Image 1 (cartoon, one colour):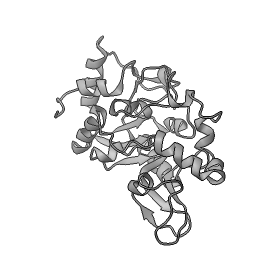
Image 2 (image 1 turned 120 degrees about the vertical axis):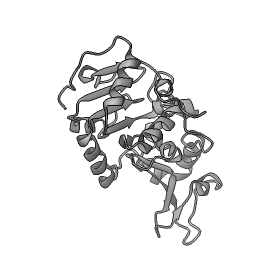
Image 3 (image 1 turned 90 degrees about the vertical axis):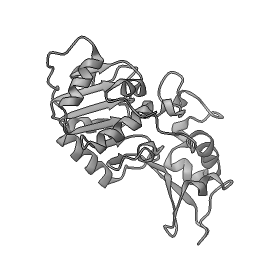
Image 4 (image 1 turned 180 degrees about the vertical axis):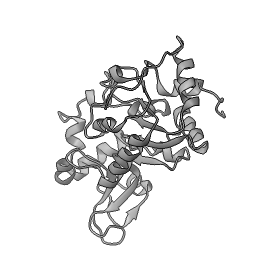
Length: 255
């Protein structure tokens, strides 16, 4: 990805961001765990995030791997239910702002690394869930599809009502490749964007982070509390929480 153009910007970063949004017609939003923290979902890679913890000598990366799922499914589901699923979470200001932009036909797509489904719950339809969603689950044997309640309300290993097979969440585990068609769609939207907003992500997970190389538009905005590898190429960098930034933009969001 070549560096985005760096125009002369107002000193106030929020004024600069508002100006960019007003000028944009094909926005793509690329988000990570930091987008959902204001909804009560903890992030993963920050200093106090989930991935800095150990669980009985096992790291989250080990438990959330394809091999662990097949070798120790009961332990996997115990961790998954208590640490990865937040059914009561609600969309925050960031999700609601993106929905408003989609209604205005200003937002061309959301590329998310999150599995919480909050973008779709906010009303967005142009969503590329790179790592799947907790709301989609399927039987490994017969392919029967189940809602999240199937996982939450079961104990131990969730079993298919039809054939008794294991019901697996449609989330991408370590050792699994993201869905090819979701990736193709995400890269297509990024390549066609005039403005790319990268928010709430450390850009440390591949292959998702490499998708930014497809961007050749005018404005690259980074909103993240910590530095990222995209900062040096960005038109504008805001060191802030995503939901707070989105709440301050115009027009005001509904309560």
